Amino acid sequence: VSSDHHVTASENPNEDSKLKAFKPLIIVFLYILLGVILLEIKSGSFNLMTAMNNFMAGFFIVFSFFKMLDLPNFASSYSSYDVIAKKWYGYGYIYPFIELLLGALFLLHAYPVFTNAATILVMGISSIGVIQSVMQKRTIQCACLGTVFNLPMSTVTIIEDLLMVAMALIMLIII
Image (cartoon, rainbow, N blue to C red; front, side, top):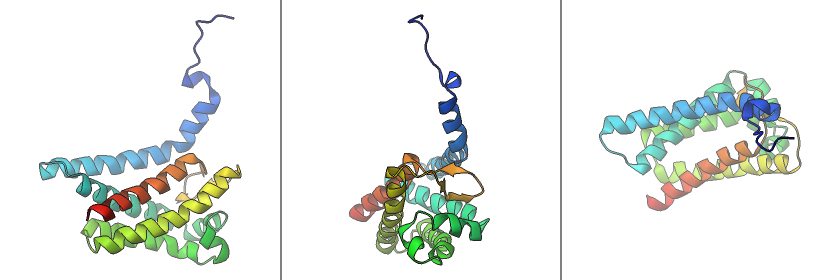
């Protein structure tokens, strides 16, 4: 066996399948990030608070859109791991509208204390069910982009939820 042999991502089918599974999420993230960068360039300066605010606006609006494409299946999928939706199935129908409202509030820079506090609460609670599912090694579909894409529940989902909590917390502290 040669010690010169290096395994690349293309030689590791597990890595390829992970990349393929998360490709839609990566593309959506990059599109939102590109939009934020373009807005910052247009403004003529970089403001971290404005960039985070705009990223969160884009995140919530785009993610709510994907959930609303198939609201009944989103609600069903979401109820399999979310702590509130497990107890009250209707929450799965309301959640995309909560995301849309948060996105609109971030986009309008309206009620920043309420908007950031609500984001911390909503995403914090959402992350509990995600963390539980990942720790239990449950193989379930992540409903973060609705049911249009078959994304596996993973640490990526935890990072996504907690990133939103962290950005909202930073913005709440700095307001």
